[in-house]
Image 1 (cartoon, rainbow, N blue to C red):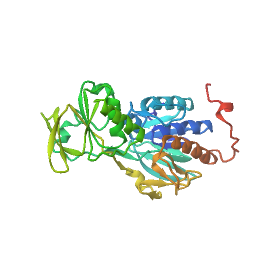
Image 2: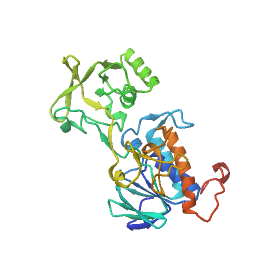
Image 3: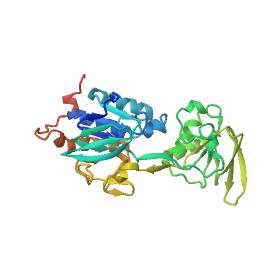
Image 4: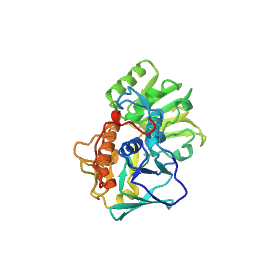
Length: 341
């Protein structure tokens, strides 16, 4: 449920980040009778899954051969709903203050939440696209230059130039080949930094004429009327240029990540990730835990399934803080059930 207008509130756990791992943490905490408030800078839940690739299939969630990111978020919200989480969306946690055995959380909208523990599930922190250095690109952004794909249908019948060699470039080249009139993939070298199976699928589509490789080239300029592009100029290693007739440019050069206020909370950081104890996911500050992509420990894997596991481990580690006088008699969900089931 959404937050009330009351600015000073109290709960057991404040979860920072409403992405897939943060949402699953609500469920794990709820199964242990711990209440959660969730804060996220975005105006909606789902994090990058919702903001960047809602229609992108995810293949490494157990029991789902493939699940679209938006559907995954919907299912996670349904799973968390019986435990009545309170969402504080469109605001950022700006300060954490120790208070007794717990913490007081302050947000950019003046909300104050007292809690027994803080669980940081902020993904990679605040993120934004790495913009290619093309003159005048800003005037086309949101009109014919996009850094994310929300709906495949928006590109039906379009001539699309995709620039980049990572997973996003490869995955969207495959997905948009179903609807676009033409797909060009611009990359500076023939080797792609993406899942081998996906690269093979893309190469198969190229052999069928559904995708055209523009290699080895890099973006060089844009042609258009200031709102709609008509062509993308590319340049090879010998400075030779050519123009690709296009309606849309999708530059996929990764995201610029910033920790934001998290960097000032006195936590142990390891290359912009929060160092945690592998067995509890607790940070260097007692009562503050971190899970998902933002945390680091020996053997850490940046996978959603690992983040789900970390959510369960952190919830069990937090339990004694919330219920100090109660022994935890762990029960499997199959025997315990969930509220309303």
